[in-house]
Each structure stands twice: as C-alpha cells, then as structure tokens.
Length: 162
Image 1 (tube, rainbow, N blue to C red):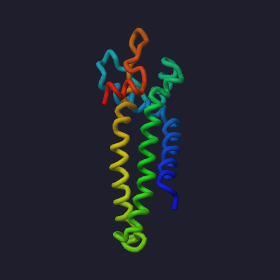
Image 2 (spheres, rainbow, N blue to C red):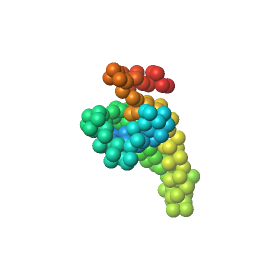
Image 3 (cartoon, helix red, strand yellow):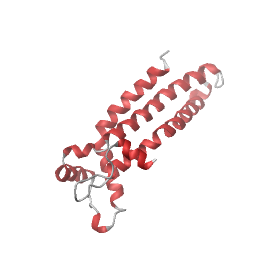
Image 4 (tube, rainbow, N blue to C red):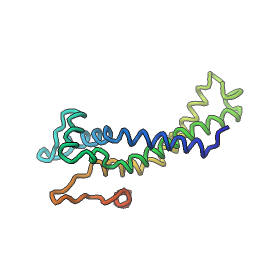
C-alpha cells in the first residue's frame, strides 16, 4: 500500500503543476466573467479567450497572465491533494471494510467509488474554498490609475476577504 502522505503528495504535485500551466486560461475565465458586471465605461469588452490573453499580454505585460498564480497553485494543490489522496485512501478503507462486498466490488464497485469520491469532495471543498475566493479576487483586481493594487499579496487578500 502507498502511504496516505504519499497519496496527498502526489495529488499536490500534480495539481500544482497543472494549475500553474493553466493559470492564463483561468485568468481569461475570471476576467471575461467579471467584465459583464462592470459599468459600461470600465468594461474591457473581450471578444474571445485569445483576445483576452493577447490584450493582457500587450496591455499589461506577459507576466500578468500569471497574476494570482500563487493562490491558484495553492488552491489546486490542496484540491488535488484532497481529491486524489482522500479518494484513494477512502477506496482502500471501504474496500477493506466489507461494506461494499468482497474487495469493494459489490455492483462492480460503483457504490464504493461513489462514497469514496463523496468523502473526498467534501474535504476538498472545505480546504480549497477560501483559496478559491482569494484566487478570483487577485486575478480580477484592477490596477488603479496610479499603478497601485488593491491587494499587496495573497496573505493580504486572504486577510481582507476571509
């Protein structure tokens, strides 16, 4: 058996790498979603994901496509860790318990898998939700005319938001 800590670690690494690579698309999603809620004079009027990413790169700099990457990576690390690690651990537990037949294979293992993913989703959402709020706020924060930001760091945003 693989230890629970190793399962959590593998989930963390996979989630962290995937989220860092995917941060620009996450930025586009957040920006495009928030754009319609702005007053007409403040809207960016993005026409597509590619238009959004291109304009961010040109108008704000390429590095701004990774604005909010830290909370995005932390959130995904925690979420993936819980989803992968807890699902695997719960499957091992349920399989050994006999509640779902020999080796958890009652009805092809579907009830056991459902229960294992239910448990992991519960924990993943509890752990990741505060970071989801921070991630979205940092990705969507405007730069003022004088160049200052609403939040100075992930910690500052967390303290002001949660």
